[in-house]
Image (cartoon, rainbow, N blue to C red):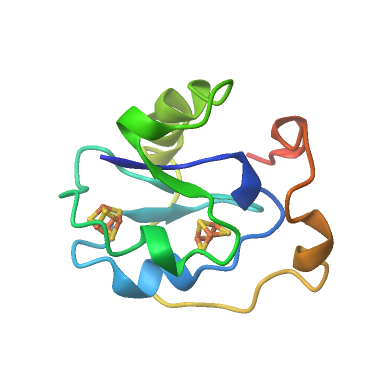
Length: 106
Ligand code: SF4
Ligand code: F3S
């Protein structure tokens, strides 16, 4: 499956959800995750993310391996999102900022 990684936190552009044919994105307060049990590896979402936060599971950046389990865990508790919404007003400021995992809201 594909995995949403750290750079989505506090960016949350949501362009990704519109292209997913199986509605496997789930939304939290400041982050999205992909349900690994639903993702069919179609690859469509990866280029849609303006901050390049989506990776194939086998290609997650070094140090972010924990996001694989985090996507699986949070997909079970967060609701599905299928329609794009406006990103946070300060999304651009958070693009590429390090250590955003500690800012994840559940
Ligand atoms: Fe959805 Fe395809 Fe992305 Fe998987 S790879 S999350 S099926 S758009
Ligand atoms: Fe996050 Fe990128 Fe989607 S910032 S919400 S993974 S478009």
